[in-house]
Length: 178
Image (tube, rainbow, N blue to C red; front, top):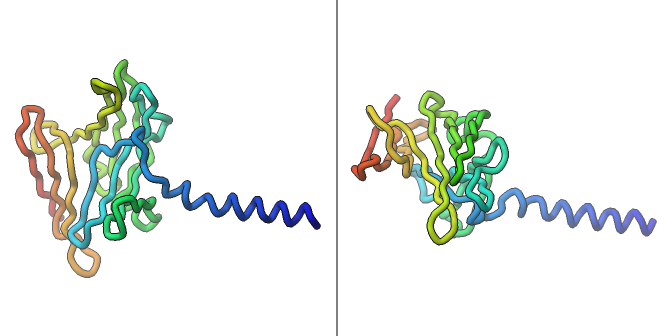
């Protein structure tokens, strides 16, 4: 009987830790490459890359997608729900390539599978890692900073706006409509 009580306590404690692990605050070794916002609130969907000390992507699926729940507080974070995957999630394949000073991960958002996004990682002076997202804007590539989704009632999208910066520093904006 004593053993069963002890086992129940250990299992209960372990299960209590699972939510905190699932929604852990992103670490400095998991920097966000870009984020998405919607017109209905301040919450953000972030696309972050798990990195090692050499700024190399970790694993065969290093990109994590999560909500930053700003409506509830600056440090509130949640994983995407299954029902949100078609709108904000990633295609299953993440193509990972390592470079001497970092790496590259090619992802595709499920909602825009025909537009690949390359996430590049590099070491920066003074330590730390920089992550940038690159995709096609019009005829050429540009750094993707932000995606804005203008929604309308009840469950439709008016437009999607991509915001970025070209390699020569010019602001880039592209509107996507159905």
